[in-house]
Length: 340
Ligand SMILES: NC(=O)c1ccc[n+]([C@@H]2O[C@H](COP(=O)([O-])OP(=O)(O)OC[C@H]3O[C@@H](n4cnc5c(N)ncnc54)[C@H](OP(=O)(O)O)[C@@H]3O)[C@@H](O)[C@H]2O)c1
Image (cartoon, rainbow, N blue to C red; front, side, top):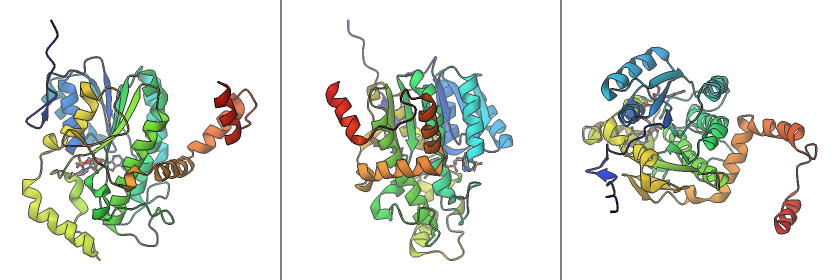
């Protein structure tokens, strides 16, 4: 007799009977908000959970909460500051050495509309943390994730990536040094999240690793801590401030808001589904800019350079490739493809 299918989403919540026993799930920014809600959920489903926090006092407190609320002891917390490439490299090195597998990576951490500031490596904070930090982290963990296939990479974006909310990639000023506004910086970084996830899905074709992004809706968390606090707010900053204070009472709880990322991480029907964008536990349309393959490729190339990954791969090619590091020209690749 055919087994009855589990309905994945019921009443907006992902069915608790979908288990993650034997799977390892890593969640960035898991000491509060949706990251913590996701950690608790994954613990309840039986996964080994790796929470990250930039501050270990907050991280340890959150881990105790996750252990208590999920009833699982298989939860650990590690320090990761996405505004520091050194911290990301130390963290990834540790994970690669100590974990035998990584089935799900949830790029959840984020900073929103902060006053103009820079990461330790000199990048605009939202560009640096929300995009470049996760870009570097994901790439450094990619071999482990590929080894664990079928596996999933889930990147948390936002409705702020849509053009009607002013989102654009400022190619000539990615660090927004000329025209910083809190909303512009956040929206750009969230559009980058979707472009990154799209390009990643292409690069992972045939590996058994999927890459999807999502928006969680409006959720009552600490994320909005800077909204409405700016000295010289633009019209858009003011709108965000008003919307925040007027509508906040109706927003989702962190547990409700976390459902779409949980769905992307566990839904059996998403096995093999990649390069898509989700909201309300359903596939939905990302913005037109987020669908631009030329943008996605250009951002990837820039991010490789900014994070130092490109340099590394060229050096690696020199020592590892059989032709002594000669990078094949595009024409050569075409010939090679025709020959195989
Ligand atoms: N809340 C919403 O309405 C909403 C809507 C759309 C999208 N999102 C997205 O959802 C994701 C989760 O946000 P949330 O609402 O749960 O916010 P949150 O409660 O503020 O959680 C954000 C997490 O990111 C961490 N973080 C910030 N800067 C970091 C850094 N430099 N290195 C490492 N971790 C860092 C925070 O750590 P600290 O606690 O130390 O600051 C926190 O753990 C974000 O990507 C956000 O853009 C949220």
